[in-house]
Structures are given as structure tokens and as C-alpha cells.
Length: 120
Image 1 (cartoon, one colour):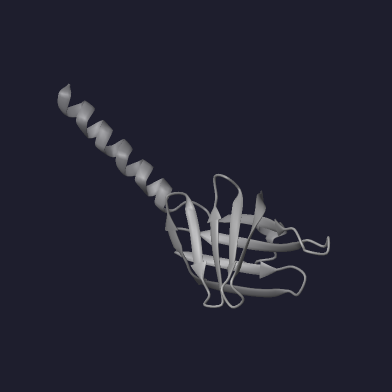
Image 2 (cartoon, helix red, strand yellow):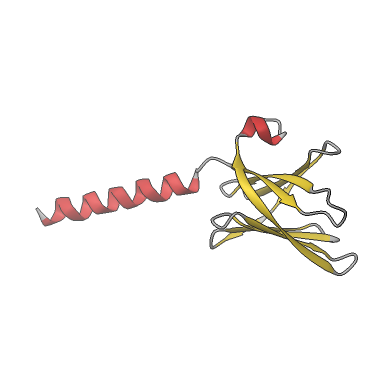
């Protein structure tokens, strides 16, 4: 009986770790309050399994996909002049505009892939 219990636990652990590693990408829409009342919206595609961090700007149609960093429920991307850090659980984002030495924060909500603007 003890062998069955241990092997059952091991099988469950393997299944759980596999499902976490191959989880579907997360799509977020994040909004930053603008200085003149107009907000800025950025959509993100976060794929921990592939290690990718996508940024889509609905206002311009600009889209890019880079290798990101994922740790502790957070995703980050350093693009040189701009760095992003998203806390997925809290639904918050920090944008570090390194080129001008400013940081600002925004709020995020989960959206579908179809709403994100990212093509499959």
C-alpha cells in the first residue's frame, strides 16, 4: 500500500509540473494614466513556457515579441530604453522609461487572445 501511495504522489507531482510548464499564454491589457488626461494602453502576451514577452500598442499597431524573464508571478522585459515589470497576480505594471529617467505604473486586466491584437 505504501508503494502505491508514493508512486501515486509522484505521478500527481509530474502531472502538475507538466501542466504548469505548458500553461497557455496570458494576455493582458494595461492602462497608464496620461499627464493630460488621455490614457495609454499597452497589451501584453506573456508565455512563460516559451519564455516570451510580447508588447502590442493598439494606438499605433506596433507589435514586438522578445525573450522575457519570469519569476515569482512576475514577468519582466528589458528593451534597453524601456523596461517593463508586470505583477500578474496583482494586475499591475511598472514602465521604466530609462531614456528619460522616469517610471510610471498602470493597472492590468486579463483579456482574450482575440482581444489582444496579437496574431496566432
